[in-house]
Length: 92
Image 1 (spheres, one colour):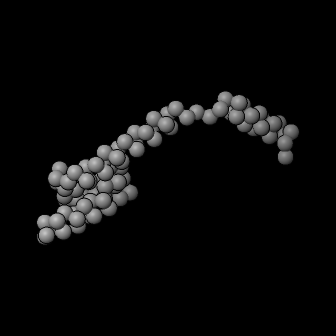
Image 2: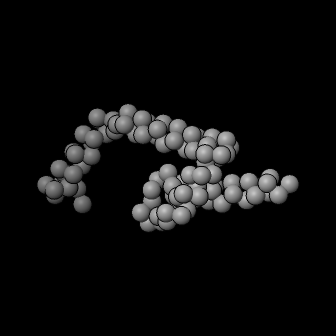
Image 3: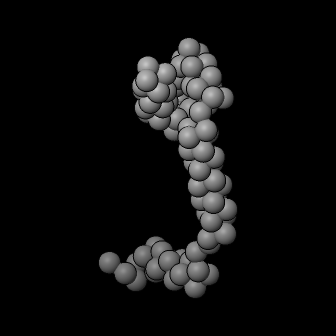
């Protein structure tokens, strides 16, 4: 019972720090003790390791999506046209 409760509390503690750990967020860095505690927990907890894998999969999918999504060429041309017309004083 105590072991299960300890694991639940450690999972909760870990979940609150997981994104900062994965992002290495300079605005909210984890200290060395927190990193060690989190990595130790991840080595023992399938549930939290699965959460890490899910976060990494989402990050990878977003990176691939962002790389493929380019603005429509005609939209860019329209924006250039509007900017040119603004510079030339045709639009107010």
